[in-house]
Length: 378
Image (tube, rainbow, N blue to C red; front, side, top):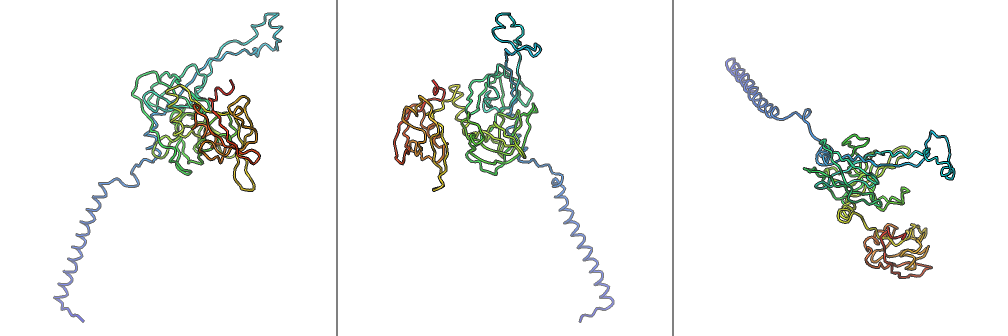
């Protein structure tokens, strides 16, 4: 047990009070120093941080363009005001041509696109198809006349050359082979003439066969996304979270509940664009058959069966018949109909393709030389 006298107790009190004062003094200095450091930094609540979407648009947004199209349409229909249904013999006999509405009219359209290099714009073929005049508008307000230097209806791609001088903003092209289902997808375009409209979603599916959508006049596999693509967005870019172009907006399928959006993979588009720049067209090797994916209930595997053979086609000349099962094309094992298309494309039109078929439980080797689809009906 410790004992303090009155004098000692007074001394202790003074020391204790001094220590408290000193402690407070020291803590205040520390607090003051810490507060100064915090005051030199922006408060988290007030700090402005750009989202990955904003950063992505800042990279590629300036390269997105509006494409206004015009084409002259001449109509031979009877004027609605005439109230007369003419027989061509009566027309010739009575000279009633004036009843026909032959006044030409200008049909206007609009779409999107993006600049990939100096003065070169990529868009959809259906945006510019049959157009007589193109006006391309940039985000900075500049407008230029454009000329279609190549288009491919089967893949719905077109290339436009701007008639003017730069400088030109350029989109950053990514790698569509690296994307996965669930990745971010940013669609950019000019729907209804509203420049640089941005919608956000994810990659919903890859390698979507357009025939599954009831589209049989196109030849490409598409990226599916739930990022909204509205009328006028066609031809605009689909971006990843880095602002790189991974696809070209091309197709919308709407229905109860929600719409489905589709884009052409940029890696596929690159090869088509190069051919359009060099040749103004794209060669599509074909052998002249339609294919059916038939699932075997015994093996639960798909058999690719020939559903139709085009008369006078390479397939017919080579001896392929309806109900033949395609087993192999060159070195490619066939597990679905798209494998046949890919293998024939890879083979080209300059050499014969070796095709292994199964007919009546027998394997038969057939040689077929593909031709360009434009020559198929000749």
